[in-house]
Image (spheres, rainbow, N blue to C red):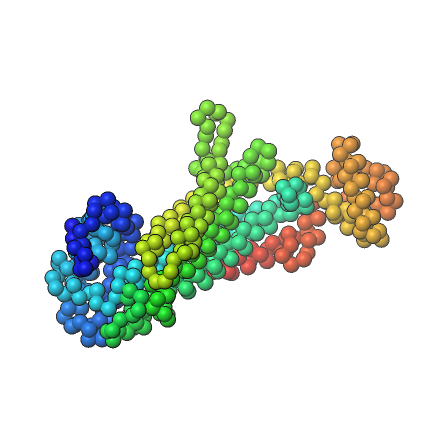
Length: 457
């Protein structure tokens, strides 16, 4: 089949080359954006007197009908077309004749492709922001539901200090809020119009790029035509944002996997988001959380793939840049799917506060509070630290916790210890005493919940 770009060549390529060169299998998802961009281009050409109003009207009506027919299912995309842009132009020309051939005046596929990708990613970014909001809201709801549950906080995966379960959950809310900020900021650089850059050097026609951009709700235009067609920073930036977001999801899912194990039993994932074993009837596997964790490498790979594709390209457009779409489309799809599973999985999660508390009680995580108690009694911190460590050793050898270690044992270590030590090392009191802003104290947690709610609104 001869191509629409037939000119100095005969437009006939080998079948194997056609298949290798074709992008319609994946860029057809930009069908609507290609129509929207072409409608705006026709309006601009008419406004500037480059084509007649009647030709513009025929083009716009033809494009609108093509979109409707595709949406209704009466127009199937031809897989033999080189790309979605050629398909739309071909169908338009078949339907309205010579006027359809005028649509491509004062533009190139280079700036057309860049525009379509920006329009598509702008829409996807808006959807991702809403999904992350829902994820943060679901986590915040769970924090409120279990606001007073005490659990051991960890460093080095070792029990460290008592915290509220809600405090741990809210840490992820803060991550998600930053993800939202990054996506919003990235959207500003996506929403810049390259149309009118043409192949690389601009055009001899008296176009109005700003008018065309305004029609597409794009407040800015690319200021340099070479940059306009060769820039994929916006796609890389979105991939970076998605990689960080996916990393946050992965870290959370790692904790869900640990917490739902028999070794922890801090939470129970609902049956709807777990699977069984084909041979072990007692198993309840956190497969959805594991898949989210596993798909993180895929998103990272998409970022690395596009960085590598672009790293050696001279300006301006090169066919290598066709590789941008599969990478960014895959990352967007992956993160959307992960969020789609993550949100209801969190909403249906059940915590086990009694198991959390038991783990906190047997982990000696109030040892720092005992040391602080001795400091308030007049000991230097390093001396208090040593005595607290000795108290833990006594507990371990005698089968006690710090809360149950007899007063006589405490006094044998330091005669400054009195009955009031038990109130000081009570786990809930330990949590309540964390009064610093952003800490795990109940008032701080309440303030964090309020902050997250406000930010999401």
